[in-house]
Image (tube, rainbow, N blue to C red; front, side, top):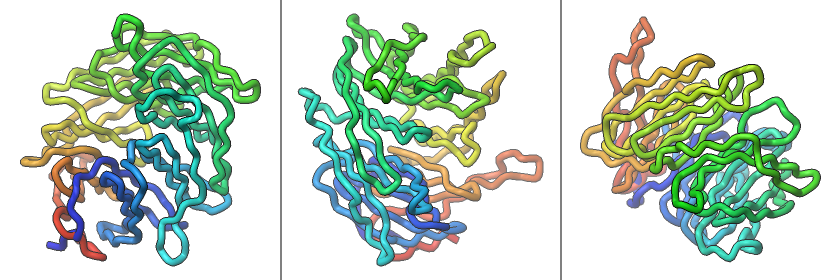
Length: 348
Protein backbone atom coordinates (compact mmCIF):
# COMPACT_ATOMS: atom_id res chain seq x y z
CA UNK A 1 0.00 0.00 0.00
CA UNK A 2 1.41 3.39 -1.02
CA UNK A 3 1.91 6.05 1.63
CA UNK A 4 2.34 9.82 1.63
CA UNK A 5 5.65 11.32 2.73
CA UNK A 6 4.54 14.04 5.20
CA UNK A 7 2.90 13.53 8.56
CA UNK A 8 0.40 15.87 10.19
CA UNK A 9 -3.23 16.21 11.07
CA UNK A 10 -5.60 17.24 8.30
CA UNK A 11 -7.73 20.22 9.30
CA UNK A 12 -9.64 20.85 6.04
CA UNK A 13 -10.28 19.08 2.75
CA UNK A 14 -12.04 20.14 -0.43
CA UNK A 15 -12.86 18.76 -3.87
CA UNK A 16 -12.74 21.25 -6.77
CA UNK A 17 -11.21 21.74 -10.23
CA UNK A 18 -8.14 24.00 -10.23
CA UNK A 19 -7.15 22.92 -13.73
CA UNK A 20 -9.53 22.54 -16.69
CA UNK A 21 -10.88 19.00 -16.94
CA UNK A 22 -9.10 17.79 -13.77
CA UNK A 23 -10.70 17.11 -10.40
CA UNK A 24 -8.48 18.09 -7.48
CA UNK A 25 -8.38 17.15 -3.82
CA UNK A 26 -7.17 20.00 -1.59
CA UNK A 27 -5.81 19.07 1.84
CA UNK A 28 -4.87 21.60 4.54
CA UNK A 29 -2.44 20.62 7.30
CA UNK A 30 -1.83 23.55 9.59
CA UNK A 31 0.17 26.00 7.46
CA UNK A 32 0.54 23.68 4.46
CA UNK A 33 -1.77 23.24 1.46
CA UNK A 34 -1.45 20.12 -0.70
CA UNK A 35 -3.11 19.66 -4.10
CA UNK A 36 -3.73 16.25 -5.67
CA UNK A 37 -5.01 15.34 -9.10
CA UNK A 38 -7.74 12.74 -8.76
CA UNK A 39 -9.07 10.43 -11.45
CA UNK A 40 -11.04 7.20 -11.06
CA UNK A 41 -9.51 6.27 -7.71
CA UNK A 42 -5.94 7.48 -8.37
CA UNK A 43 -4.33 10.38 -6.50
CA UNK A 44 -1.22 12.15 -7.74
CA UNK A 45 0.49 14.85 -5.72
CA UNK A 46 0.44 18.03 -7.84
CA UNK A 47 1.61 20.82 -5.58
CA UNK A 48 2.51 21.81 -2.03
CA UNK A 49 2.24 25.38 -0.81
CA UNK A 50 3.44 26.57 2.62
CA UNK A 51 1.49 29.52 4.03
CA UNK A 52 2.36 32.14 6.62
CA UNK A 53 -0.19 31.01 9.20
CA UNK A 54 -2.74 28.30 9.88
CA UNK A 55 -5.66 27.76 7.52
CA UNK A 56 -9.06 28.38 9.15
CA UNK A 57 -11.25 27.91 6.05
CA UNK A 58 -10.91 26.88 2.41
CA UNK A 59 -13.34 27.15 -0.45
CA UNK A 60 -13.37 27.42 -4.24
CA UNK A 61 -14.83 29.90 -6.69
CA UNK A 62 -15.42 29.27 -10.40
CA UNK A 63 -13.57 31.55 -12.82
CA UNK A 64 -15.10 31.93 -16.28
CA UNK A 65 -11.83 33.46 -17.50
CA UNK A 66 -9.74 30.49 -16.42
CA UNK A 67 -12.40 27.81 -17.01
CA UNK A 68 -11.47 26.36 -13.64
CA UNK A 69 -11.85 27.07 -9.94
CA UNK A 70 -9.81 29.48 -7.87
CA UNK A 71 -8.83 28.32 -4.40
CA UNK A 72 -9.66 30.62 -1.47
CA UNK A 73 -7.70 30.12 1.74
CA UNK A 74 -8.60 32.14 4.83
CA UNK A 75 -5.69 32.34 7.28
CA UNK A 76 -5.62 32.64 11.03
CA UNK A 77 -4.10 36.14 11.02
CA UNK A 78 -7.11 37.47 9.01
CA UNK A 79 -5.66 37.32 5.50
CA UNK A 80 -7.43 35.92 2.46
CA UNK A 81 -5.30 34.23 -0.22
CA UNK A 82 -6.66 33.61 -3.74
CA UNK A 83 -4.64 30.87 -5.43
CA UNK A 84 -4.52 29.00 -8.73
CA UNK A 85 -2.54 26.24 -10.43
CA UNK A 86 -0.14 27.15 -13.24
CA UNK A 87 1.20 25.02 -16.09
CA UNK A 88 4.26 23.77 -14.17
CA UNK A 89 1.97 22.35 -11.46
CA UNK A 90 2.73 24.94 -8.78
CA UNK A 91 0.07 26.56 -6.64
CA UNK A 92 0.57 30.33 -6.89
CA UNK A 93 -1.12 33.36 -5.37
CA UNK A 94 -3.30 35.58 -7.56
CA UNK A 95 -3.94 38.10 -4.78
CA UNK A 96 -4.15 38.55 -1.02
CA UNK A 97 -6.40 40.75 1.08
CA UNK A 98 -5.88 41.97 4.64
CA UNK A 99 -9.21 41.61 6.43
CA UNK A 100 -8.12 43.00 9.79
CA UNK A 101 -8.75 46.70 9.02
CA UNK A 102 -12.26 46.91 10.49
CA UNK A 103 -11.96 44.35 13.24
CA UNK A 104 -10.60 44.80 16.74
CA UNK A 105 -11.08 41.08 17.34
CA UNK A 106 -8.16 38.68 17.12
CA UNK A 107 -10.54 35.85 16.34
CA UNK A 108 -10.13 34.40 12.85
CA UNK A 109 -13.20 35.12 10.70
CA UNK A 110 -15.48 32.61 9.06
CA UNK A 111 -15.91 32.79 5.29
CA UNK A 112 -19.23 32.75 3.39
CA UNK A 113 -19.65 32.81 -0.38
CA UNK A 114 -22.43 33.95 -2.69
CA UNK A 115 -21.53 32.41 -6.03
CA UNK A 116 -24.26 34.28 -7.91
CA UNK A 117 -22.77 37.73 -7.27
CA UNK A 118 -19.18 36.70 -6.46
CA UNK A 119 -19.77 38.24 -3.03
CA UNK A 120 -17.96 36.97 0.04
CA UNK A 121 -18.70 37.82 3.64
CA UNK A 122 -16.34 37.58 6.59
CA UNK A 123 -17.85 37.51 10.06
CA UNK A 124 -16.03 38.48 13.22
CA UNK A 125 -17.23 39.34 16.70
CA UNK A 126 -19.89 42.03 15.96
CA UNK A 127 -18.47 42.85 12.50
CA UNK A 128 -19.49 41.80 8.98
CA UNK A 129 -17.12 42.52 6.11
CA UNK A 130 -18.19 42.22 2.45
CA UNK A 131 -15.98 41.88 -0.60
CA UNK A 132 -16.00 40.59 -4.16
CA UNK A 133 -13.57 38.58 -6.22
CA UNK A 134 -13.20 39.11 -9.96
CA UNK A 135 -12.87 36.25 -12.43
CA UNK A 136 -9.12 36.99 -12.49
CA UNK A 137 -8.82 36.67 -8.71
CA UNK A 138 -8.61 40.32 -7.64
CA UNK A 139 -10.23 41.06 -4.26
CA UNK A 140 -12.14 44.29 -3.56
CA UNK A 141 -13.39 45.14 -0.08
CA UNK A 142 -16.81 46.81 -0.46
CA UNK A 143 -18.01 47.73 3.01
CA UNK A 144 -18.37 46.55 6.60
CA UNK A 145 -21.25 46.59 9.05
CA UNK A 146 -21.38 46.36 12.83
CA UNK A 147 -24.16 44.53 14.68
CA UNK A 148 -25.21 44.01 18.28
CA UNK A 149 -24.83 40.26 18.33
CA UNK A 150 -21.69 38.39 19.33
CA UNK A 151 -19.76 35.17 18.82
CA UNK A 152 -20.60 34.51 15.18
CA UNK A 153 -19.73 30.96 14.22
CA UNK A 154 -20.91 30.35 10.65
CA UNK A 155 -23.42 31.36 8.00
CA UNK A 156 -24.56 31.03 4.40
CA UNK A 157 -26.41 32.96 1.72
CA UNK A 158 -29.94 31.58 1.35
CA UNK A 159 -30.96 30.44 -2.12
CA UNK A 160 -33.83 32.71 -3.14
CA UNK A 161 -35.34 34.36 -6.20
CA UNK A 162 -35.04 37.94 -4.95
CA UNK A 163 -32.62 40.61 -6.11
CA UNK A 164 -31.02 41.24 -2.70
CA UNK A 165 -28.94 38.40 -1.17
CA UNK A 166 -30.19 37.07 2.18
CA UNK A 167 -27.46 36.11 4.63
CA UNK A 168 -28.27 33.70 7.48
CA UNK A 169 -25.81 33.67 10.39
CA UNK A 170 -25.37 31.56 13.53
CA UNK A 171 -24.50 33.67 16.55
CA UNK A 172 -25.15 34.15 20.27
CA UNK A 173 -27.67 36.65 21.60
CA UNK A 174 -27.08 38.91 24.62
CA UNK A 175 -28.09 36.05 26.93
CA UNK A 176 -25.61 33.64 25.39
CA UNK A 177 -28.24 31.51 23.60
CA UNK A 178 -27.58 30.31 20.06
CA UNK A 179 -29.80 31.93 17.40
CA UNK A 180 -30.07 31.98 13.61
CA UNK A 181 -30.63 35.49 12.28
CA UNK A 182 -31.02 36.77 8.71
CA UNK A 183 -29.75 39.94 7.04
CA UNK A 184 -30.40 41.61 3.68
CA UNK A 185 -27.15 42.59 1.97
CA UNK A 186 -27.52 45.49 -0.48
CA UNK A 187 -24.05 45.69 -2.02
CA UNK A 188 -25.01 48.52 -4.41
CA UNK A 189 -25.84 50.81 -1.46
CA UNK A 190 -23.18 49.32 0.79
CA UNK A 191 -25.61 48.62 3.59
CA UNK A 192 -26.99 45.64 5.50
CA UNK A 193 -30.57 45.51 6.84
CA UNK A 194 -32.16 43.19 9.41
CA UNK A 195 -33.69 40.22 7.60
CA UNK A 196 -37.27 38.95 7.76
CA UNK A 197 -36.60 35.78 9.78
CA UNK A 198 -34.97 34.88 13.07
CA UNK A 199 -34.96 31.58 14.95
CA UNK A 200 -34.45 31.61 18.71
CA UNK A 201 -34.66 27.83 19.16
CA UNK A 202 -31.41 26.67 17.56
CA UNK A 203 -29.51 23.89 19.33
CA UNK A 204 -26.67 25.31 21.43
CA UNK A 205 -24.12 23.00 19.78
CA UNK A 206 -24.91 24.15 16.22
CA UNK A 207 -21.72 24.91 14.29
CA UNK A 208 -22.40 25.20 10.53
CA UNK A 209 -24.99 26.46 8.07
CA UNK A 210 -25.67 25.06 4.62
CA UNK A 211 -28.14 26.46 2.06
CA UNK A 212 -29.67 23.66 -0.09
CA UNK A 213 -30.26 24.66 -3.72
CA UNK A 214 -33.73 25.38 -5.04
CA UNK A 215 -36.30 23.87 -5.22
CA UNK A 216 -35.39 22.53 -1.75
CA UNK A 217 -34.15 25.90 -0.48
CA UNK A 218 -34.24 27.08 3.12
CA UNK A 219 -31.37 26.52 5.54
CA UNK A 220 -29.69 23.48 7.10
CA UNK A 221 -28.01 23.88 10.49
CA UNK A 222 -25.62 21.21 11.75
CA UNK A 223 -23.55 20.60 14.86
CA UNK A 224 -23.31 18.63 18.06
CA UNK A 225 -25.70 15.70 17.73
CA UNK A 226 -28.40 17.48 15.77
CA UNK A 227 -29.33 18.46 12.23
CA UNK A 228 -32.11 20.98 11.69
CA UNK A 229 -33.68 22.15 8.44
CA UNK A 230 -35.71 25.34 8.18
CA UNK A 231 -37.59 26.16 4.98
CA UNK A 232 -38.33 29.81 5.69
CA UNK A 233 -38.02 32.26 2.84
CA UNK A 234 -39.74 30.19 0.19
CA UNK A 235 -42.71 31.88 -1.47
CA UNK A 236 -46.07 30.19 -1.04
CA UNK A 237 -44.79 27.70 1.55
CA UNK A 238 -45.62 27.63 5.23
CA UNK A 239 -42.47 27.67 7.35
CA UNK A 240 -41.58 24.24 8.68
CA UNK A 241 -38.78 22.70 10.70
CA UNK A 242 -37.22 19.23 10.58
CA UNK A 243 -34.95 18.10 13.42
CA UNK A 244 -32.83 14.95 13.44
CA UNK A 245 -31.00 13.92 16.62
CA UNK A 246 -27.93 11.77 15.97
CA UNK A 247 -27.66 8.74 18.31
CA UNK A 248 -23.87 8.95 18.33
CA UNK A 249 -21.12 11.47 19.09
CA UNK A 250 -20.90 15.03 17.85
CA UNK A 251 -20.69 15.95 14.17
CA UNK A 252 -17.32 17.19 12.90
CA UNK A 253 -17.89 18.01 9.23
CA UNK A 254 -19.99 17.66 6.11
CA UNK A 255 -19.72 17.95 2.33
CA UNK A 256 -22.26 18.44 -0.47
CA UNK A 257 -22.32 15.60 -2.98
CA UNK A 258 -22.59 15.80 -6.79
CA UNK A 259 -26.33 16.14 -6.25
CA UNK A 260 -26.28 19.23 -3.99
CA UNK A 261 -29.54 18.10 -2.36
CA UNK A 262 -27.47 15.40 -0.65
CA UNK A 263 -24.88 15.78 2.10
CA UNK A 264 -22.32 13.35 3.47
CA UNK A 265 -21.73 13.99 7.19
CA UNK A 266 -19.10 12.64 9.61
CA UNK A 267 -19.14 12.41 13.39
CA UNK A 268 -16.14 12.20 15.69
CA UNK A 269 -16.56 8.46 16.31
CA UNK A 270 -16.04 7.64 12.61
CA UNK A 271 -19.66 7.12 11.53
CA UNK A 272 -20.43 8.58 8.09
CA UNK A 273 -24.05 9.57 7.34
CA UNK A 274 -25.99 10.36 4.19
CA UNK A 275 -28.68 13.05 4.14
CA UNK A 276 -31.03 13.50 1.19
CA UNK A 277 -33.26 16.59 1.17
CA UNK A 278 -36.46 16.91 -0.86
CA UNK A 279 -39.07 19.65 -0.82
CA UNK A 280 -41.36 17.73 1.53
CA UNK A 281 -39.01 15.49 3.49
CA UNK A 282 -35.49 14.63 4.65
CA UNK A 283 -34.07 11.11 4.52
CA UNK A 284 -31.18 10.35 6.87
CA UNK A 285 -29.20 7.11 7.03
CA UNK A 286 -25.84 5.64 8.08
CA UNK A 287 -23.57 5.28 5.07
CA UNK A 288 -20.63 3.43 6.66
CA UNK A 289 -18.48 3.31 9.78
CA UNK A 290 -14.73 3.73 10.15
CA UNK A 291 -13.26 1.94 13.16
CA UNK A 292 -10.22 3.25 15.01
CA UNK A 293 -10.26 6.62 13.23
CA UNK A 294 -10.92 10.13 14.46
CA UNK A 295 -12.21 12.14 11.46
CA UNK A 296 -11.55 15.87 11.19
CA UNK A 297 -13.19 16.62 7.82
CA UNK A 298 -14.80 14.92 4.83
CA UNK A 299 -15.31 15.65 1.15
CA UNK A 300 -17.15 13.78 -1.60
CA UNK A 301 -15.41 13.06 -4.90
CA UNK A 302 -16.85 11.54 -8.08
CA UNK A 303 -17.74 7.86 -8.61
CA UNK A 304 -18.83 7.35 -4.96
CA UNK A 305 -15.33 8.06 -3.59
CA UNK A 306 -14.79 9.97 -0.33
CA UNK A 307 -11.77 11.47 1.38
CA UNK A 308 -11.87 11.59 5.19
CA UNK A 309 -9.17 13.59 6.98
CA UNK A 310 -7.91 12.59 10.42
CA UNK A 311 -7.09 14.66 13.51
CA UNK A 312 -4.20 12.26 14.13
CA UNK A 313 -2.33 11.89 10.85
CA UNK A 314 -3.32 12.02 7.17
CA UNK A 315 -6.61 10.41 6.19
CA UNK A 316 -8.06 7.82 3.90
CA UNK A 317 -9.66 7.50 0.49
CA UNK A 318 -12.54 5.07 0.14
CA UNK A 319 -15.40 4.09 -2.12
CA UNK A 320 -19.00 3.17 -1.43
CA UNK A 321 -20.28 0.26 -3.50
CA UNK A 322 -23.98 0.37 -4.39
CA UNK A 323 -26.02 -2.73 -5.33
CA UNK A 324 -28.42 -3.03 -8.26
CA UNK A 325 -31.32 -1.80 -6.11
CA UNK A 326 -29.45 1.39 -5.21
CA UNK A 327 -28.68 0.28 -1.64
CA UNK A 328 -25.32 0.39 0.14
CA UNK A 329 -23.49 -2.89 -0.41
CA UNK A 330 -20.18 -2.19 1.34
CA UNK A 331 -17.50 0.46 1.86
CA UNK A 332 -14.01 -0.26 0.53
CA UNK A 333 -10.96 1.55 1.89
CA UNK A 334 -8.94 2.25 -1.24
CA UNK A 335 -5.97 3.99 0.36
CA UNK A 336 -4.67 4.92 3.79
CA UNK A 337 -3.00 8.31 3.43
CA UNK A 338 -0.86 8.51 6.53
CA UNK A 339 2.82 8.65 7.33
CA UNK A 340 5.23 9.50 4.50
CA UNK A 341 3.87 10.90 1.21
CA UNK A 342 4.84 9.61 -2.20
CA UNK A 343 4.55 11.65 -5.35
CA UNK A 344 1.92 9.28 -6.73
CA UNK A 345 -0.65 7.27 -4.82
CA UNK A 346 -2.48 4.43 -6.48
CA UNK A 347 -5.95 3.72 -5.12
CA UNK A 348 -7.07 0.94 -7.48
